[in-house]
Length: 506
Image 1 (cartoon, rainbow, N blue to C red):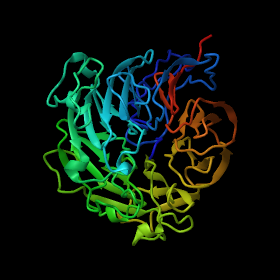
Image 2 (image 1 turned 90 degrees about the vertical axis):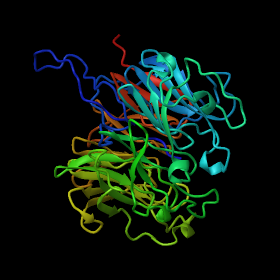
Image 3 (image 1 turned 180 degrees about the vertical axis):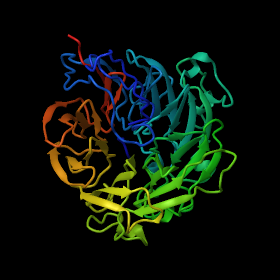
C-alpha cells in the first residue's frame, strides 16, 4: 500500500509588527488536507519549526502519542483536532478486539483522545484489506466535517466533534458498523465517531480495491473527488473490475454519486489506483489533475454546479508519462524488473501552469526505472508528444509527491535518495543518500526539507540548491507518513508513534 503521503493548507495568517522586521514566527494555521491547498504541493508557510529534537531528553517535544503498530497515514490538523489513521494493535477501547482500521481524533493541545472511528476488516479476499495495515487514507476537513476513506473502501463524512454533540443524521447505525457481521452491535459512546453519511465504493460503483484503500479526498466547491484504489486480484494476474472507475465525484453534503471518469483506465492498471487528485486553474478554467494506475496523467474539467453535471467527467488532456512502455496485456509483465508498464503512486502537483509528477515501475512488481516529469498544463487533447518540458531520472522507483519552492523541486525515491533539481529546467543540484528506503514525501517548511525513511531515520536538510545536512534522528520504528506543519508545530509519524514537535523558547 501507499503511504506516505500530507493535507489542504489554508491561508497564511501571520502577526507582524508595524516594522519591516519580522519579530514573531509566521504560522500558516491549520493543515486540513494532505498537501498545500488544492495544488498538493508539499510546502508549508510555517516558520519557527525545530531543526532537531530528542525524544530521550524531551528537547523540542510538545507531546508524543502511541499509535498502533502499523501507521501508513499522514496526519491532518484542523479546528483544534489532529486526525491520523492507524491499526488496532493497541486498542484505545477494550470493546474493540482484533484487527481493525482506526482513525484517531486527538486534541491538538496535548494529544489526548477526543474520539475514534473503528472499522472491522473486510473478511475476504486477503488482498482487498491487508491484515494490520489499518486506515491508510489521510482525512480532509472542512468546517465541522471530516471526510475519509476507510480500510473497506467506504467514503465517510464524519462530524469533527464526534458524538459529543449527539448522533447526527442521516446515518444512525454506528453501533452496527463498528462490529463484524454476526457480532452484536455495540452501544455508541462519546468516544466513538459520528458518521453523517457513508458511500460504499465496492457496492455502489463495483470497484475491487487492492491491498487497502488509499485516498486523500480533494474537496472543491460542492464536490469530493475520490480515487477508488481499484486494482489487481489476489493472484496479481488480472483486474477483477476492469470497467469500474478510477476516479469518482460525490456531493459533499449528501454523499450521492455525481459523476465519474470514463477513460477505460481499469484494464491498463498495472497494480492499483492509489494516486489522489489535485486541482489548479489554467487559462481561466479549473482543472482536476489525476494520475491513473496506467501511468497516465489526466486533466478533467472541474464541476461547477450540481445543476449541470455530465454523465462522466470531461477530459481536457491526457499525458502518458511512459509512452514506450507496454500498453497491452500489461499483467504479463508482473515481476519483470527490466521491462514493464509504469504506474503512479504519488500525487500530481500543480505549480505555475505546470504539473510535476513522479512515475515509474511498480515498487513490488515492475521495472526499477522512475522519473520526475514536468508537464505543460496549458495544452489540450493528447499532449504526450508536446507537453513534456523536462524529465529527470530518479534512482529507483518512487512513491513520493514533490515539494516545489523557490524554483527548486525536492523529491525522494525508493532508492534511498533525496533529490534537489531546478523547477524550470530539471537540472540536478544535489542528491542525498538517506540510507533507507523512502515511501513518504518531503515537506519543505521554514527553509528546511523534512523527510523520514523506512529505516526509521528522520532527516532535516537545507531547502537550497547547496546541499547541507542540518540533522538526523533515529526514531522508534519505520516512517511511512509525510511530515506535517501546522500552528507552529511539526508532526512526525512513525509506525508506532505520533510526535508533535515545537521549538523550545528556553
